[in-house]
Image (cartoon, rainbow, N blue to C red; front, side, top):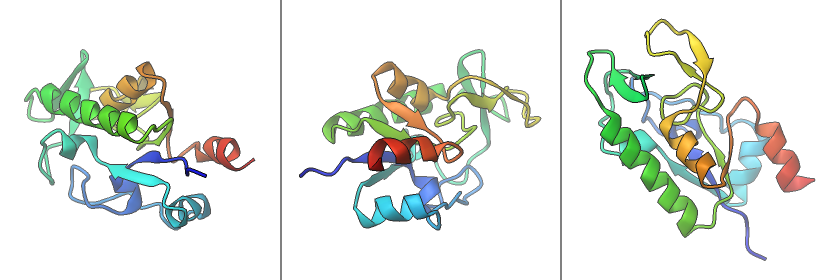
Length: 153
């Protein structure tokens, strides 16, 4: 039987790809441990896959563009990374993704508002939006229990 593959933000599995050079490691979570043990996770950082370096100046979405804190437009990098994520999903027949909450790439449902004041607004990051538009169900580390029920119940 073929195991389901799941795309995951690589920062969530401990890769140091965040804008500040750190990560958001959640591998101690028992559900994530189970997915790792079953070799079900495919990690990707869309921002790095799109060509951005680590560390990098923070980016938020402003008028549907990815603008860094210095006012530079990084939209092309975000679009390129989202496209790479979609290609991986197609290659591995991925139906689900666990992506970083609030990220301008990976955020789903809530993202920062573009003022760099940690204010949240309803919306999706570039990668989340593209994946959802292509039928891939997106979860964050804040609502993984829904995916766990889908996969293991």
